[in-house]
Image (tube, rainbow, N blue to C red; front, side, top):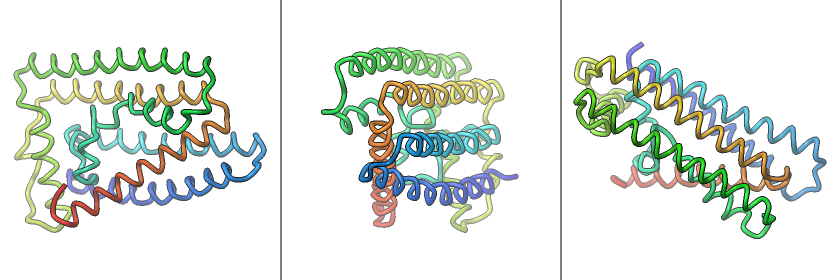
Length: 235
């Protein structure tokens, strides 16, 4: 399957995934407003966690096909791509969201545990940043971001009905770079998921609902703004 077809398939998946995201958001807001029993809340939380797991599973398939696609995804708006770190959101953003959403609801013990997790996360983020820099230096690779942007533009043009171009023949990724980047993205995604799960374990079920509402609203808001700006001709 060509890269443009892979990108089109993931974009179709993403559209369905975002529709389910909105449905989960409605359920989460309802759970916030109603006296929902804990068993129902836990069931909803598990469904939301599985929902995000589906995203990572599909994304990993794209990365295996061509790693550059996930570094500059043509299915994202320009604004969404500005938030990317190692082919996804920066794990540290989790703490900004949880502290904003639950500022007055966290106990001192919860705050202490979240600070510990945040420090561990920052350390692992720095490790991944350093390893990415070393990968490029060791094989004298061209700037990764520019490679990814060029590849993403080619795929986007084909998706939008532009001239048929073999993107793979224009952007050649050395196998050593491909393997190294795939490994880094796997580890970065694991850090994203594990950070979120650790935060969820610190929170009470009702707090988790509030946290997930804030995450979903932020994601959907950024996407809507980004698509609107792109439609207007720039971000």
